[in-house]
Amino acid sequence: MSAILVVNSGSSSFKYQLIEIETEQVLASGLVERIGEDVGHTKHTTTEGSWESEDPIADHTAGFAAMLAAFGDHGPSLDEHPLIAVGHRVVHGGKRFHEATIVTDLVKINIEDLSELAPLHNPANLAGIDAAQKAFPSVPQVAVFDTAFHQTLPPAAYTYAIDASLAERQRIRRYGFHGTSHKYVSGAAAEYLGKDVSSLRMIVLHLGNGASVCAVDGGRSVETSMGMTPLEGLVMGTRSGDLDPAVLFHLNRKTGMGFAELDELLNRRSGLLGLSGKGDMRDVQKAAAAGDPAAELALEVYLHRIRGYVGSYYAQLRHLDAVVFTAGVGENNPLVRARSLAGLEELGITVDAELNEAPGSEARTISPASSRVKVLVVPTNEELEIARQSFAAVSA
Image (cartoon, rainbow, N blue to C red; front, side, top):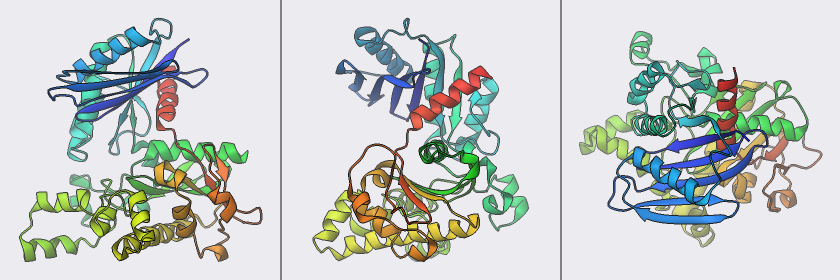
């Protein structure tokens, strides 16, 4: 039966899943990491078990060879599950790519050109594409862009109020990210509710180490919290989210901090980590429960920001059918879910304490039957969404 290989490539690692397209079953998954170091690490998992190995992995091409060796040694057979496509997560598609796209030389040039907007991600994504083309020269490669779902944003939502000609020349605008997750989750939420996504207005809260909000109207992204980069918006594990830009001018004048130091500050030493010394929400909550005032403040700032975005996007949508939590924190943290929506009962948003605390791994409702707005927890599955979009691209 035909399958799609989904690849998420970073600068020194890549994750993969082999998905049988008709049943959407995950046949195998794995991780190749520490690429370029003295000793690399490969982990390959199937329904039969999990295997690990350590060998030097010089580059992504060698990483794909290690992955193919794992398939050969432990299965499943790629001859029995022939690939119809390799689907790649690509972080930034700018305003050029509105949907999953079969990779050509021109597409690769565009991905490379857009690297100035995502210097930590697009080059690594491109390295994965290059390696996959060498490993599977006759299989179509498909780029699935994190930004594509947000290309339906109206101009009022994606335009920054700066000099228009300068913004156009330098490609400064809101692009939004986590689009693959927001698309999958909004569709899955509609399916769970037994309604067509085109009839629903919802707010999707993707809360992980990186976090973003998306207002979805009829299956289309109409507002999102991340901006030109993934730095804007919610408080995250190590990222500041929204910040008065004049703070950077002030720090430069008063401390002499340069661009590299400011970038490091806002992306890697801010957010929950900057406020509490702990970048993981579980550690922050544990410290707050033990009476740590810095951790409690970090938690309150995090929740305050979410609540503000929910209210803002409710106003933009003008009607709301559902608030949907997803990703690591959103799916697994009842305290964050309850406290981030606390006090919104007059807006028709209520969380049922018992339903919220009940564990679960499937889509579920955590609002009482009387709540005008449904509050849901819907697990995300970006790999499956990439597989679906890749299949659609090669079938078109």
